[in-house]
Length: 293
Image (cartoon, rainbow, N blue to C red; front, side, top):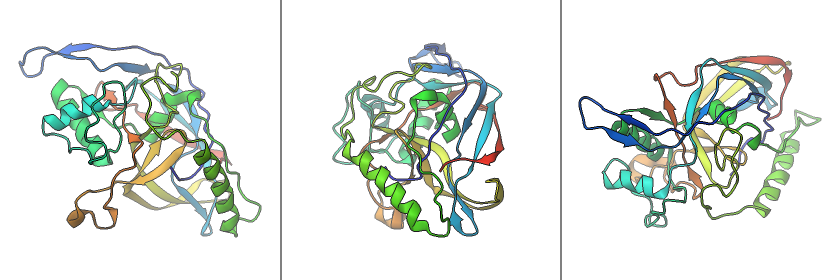
């Protein structure tokens, strides 16, 4: 995974609750929603926001931001499994995986090779099947839930911001070190540990789609945004061992244009379940100091 490199520190306490809920939707027979969920408590944390930040046309670090979640939210304790995604495919609600992944139906391994559209289709299918509202998390929700399990090597601001090559070289150095120690094959759930909130593999070798779009911002000397330069929802933020940006690959050459391709093999999903359709109700504000991007 390539992308902007950051270090993130979460400062809020988190709590775990596994959930199995029975429901009845529009008079239908009661059905069990066996999805295991961790309850993430309301609170505050600090993080470095996703996106590209420019000053006078040159890449710079964004300001670190405080974010407060007025309400808690629930997130899947683990990623969606191969068997769970296969059930969605069997129902005709999800697109079949590409040939290399198609036979993958293990219940203890995360499904990978899914696009953002695939992940969104699964969320819609699970919502319709259970009567609860499931969705992809925002990047901020993911980072908050990950807590101390998510740690990044940092690329500091370079001495000459007018020379982008200095920053590129620093990013390339860290990226090559990551690739040298990469574990390519998805591992059984829990192989990369469980964080204090009860979420497994938050910094494992399978990245999670988020619903956050890639943005570009113009910032002032203090690192605060002074002008939004654009939002590209054809590219979404993904989170795992580090943050990255991935385009939503479309398999149909007629509709995909430059985005035609196969999603990366170690890209999966875990979902948030809303209690009231409003998610974590986050409020954020910038601090008046520079962060690290």
